[in-house]
Length: 436
Ligand code: HEC
Image (spheres, rainbow, N blue to C red):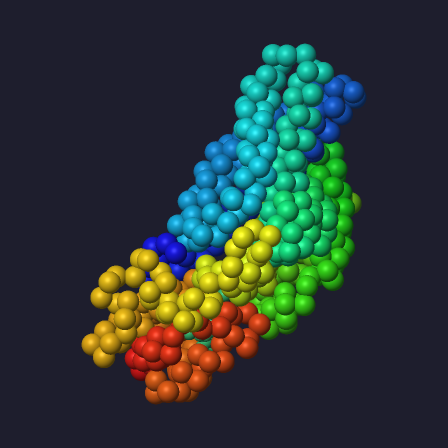
């Protein structure tokens, strides 16, 4: 175990959520944008339409500054935040996928260098070379998606990895292809929406209309395909994830998955027919809509992993809950249940390792921090506040709360309590005290 993230109201999940949410916009722009860019650059050369190059240059600058300054910074931010929030899970991912990450970084380096080379060699190298630089960038950035999707989907559906422990058994799992195809389709929609925004500022009418028309058609096609692949993805989700989906997908999130992409599709269809109607503010609104759609998807993806951070292996509170003989790993639950979580976790202060009458509430709080705080706030505000939840259940006395604790593992999204009886009583006493 590691030290615990403990900031009132700001749970670790929230910090990751905030950074990751921001990161979505630049990261998804970066994989898709260059495809559109080289398409227009080629068109400009072939049809001798230099006015299109004005768009290509502006769009690449957006890519450079937004995706590769803000996007890169927030990407590093996700590593910092997740490492602090869930060091054991990150360690698990690194031990298992170190060569995947290494490959990812190689392609990312090509991207980062590539965008600077692309932007700063306009009119400095011959056309063919410049286009080739664009292609290299486009393929390198899409390759980062091909790799990261394997690791992302592994965190929801590890396939037969829990039995075999093999790299590719976890990587090519049952949600890999639907999610890769869905993200690939969505990236064209995202690139299209950004392109409309950039094109709406072009002075040349003809260039503006042709970019807007093409970008909207890419956007519409991308959204339609993404919708189809999303249904495929949903269909292959394993039963525990389906159970989470049924229990946790609130109406707001459901709306977020359907309405924003549908509105964006209508907007693209409208612009495809009347490209001259494109203007800046509706274009920006379309990006906000797409953002709401992606946010809802990512949030749902996070929800349906519960109670695990890596299913079949590690719970969200970073306790290893399963045997993985192929990796020489065994479940920690028997030891925790026999000796106690307070003795198991080396970061528990010495005076709290044994529950006594004098330290009961403080020991209980420590247990809540270790076992519950990755998903619940211990204050009345923040994510899934425990005082509010306990009160809502009408559990007033420590004995009532004990009964609630016994029932946790029966819910599809929560790990059961693990620890000794004395520890359960301490946790119950603490939870009853904060619910007062
Ligand atoms: C993997 C994340 C996770 C962990 C760890 C976790 N919970 Fe939960 N818990 C949830 C989710 C998700 C819900 C459902 C919230 C909702 O309904 O929106 C929930 C709901 C609850 C509820 C309300 C149940 C009901 O019937 O309304 C209680 C009480 C609760 N948790 C207590 C705990 C306690 C105590 C711990 C620590 C021992 C804990 N949880 C650990 C995710 C978690």
